[in-house]
Length: 153
Image 1 (tube, rainbow, N blue to C red):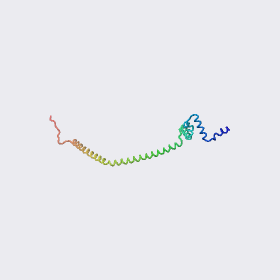
Image 2 (image 1 turned 45 degrees about the vertical axis):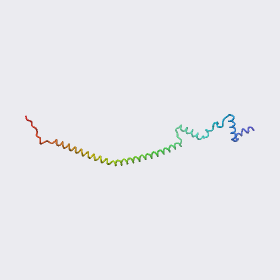
Image 3 (image 1 turned 60 degrees about the horizontal axis):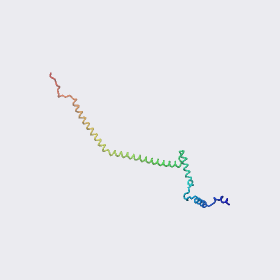
Image 4 (image 1 turned 120 degrees about the vertical axis):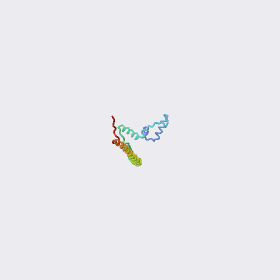
């Protein structure tokens, strides 16, 4: 009969094992919360496997497909954003050029003033040139009223 009990221990209800564990704790003076968690590493075996697999793959400088796809998607989004910003910059530069051309048109009053001053300066220089060129022409002409001096010896 003793053999029958030892062979059928695994058919016992769970409370039997809990009672055995409780008896063991009392015997050794252990508290209920002080038991080590032996099965903590087995609770998330797939996560542990994925983690170790990623570490193994990273040793070969290989990226998992999911991570590659995420990075590719992020790259495409950033590229679209960059293209949109380039287009905005191009449009703003065009607006700046148009505004600059309008500002030049508004400055036409200044251009007219400069043109007037240039014409006045040119006229002044021509009049000064005619005055000096007229006096030089008179110096080149021989004087008729003056007689050459004769020396008495």
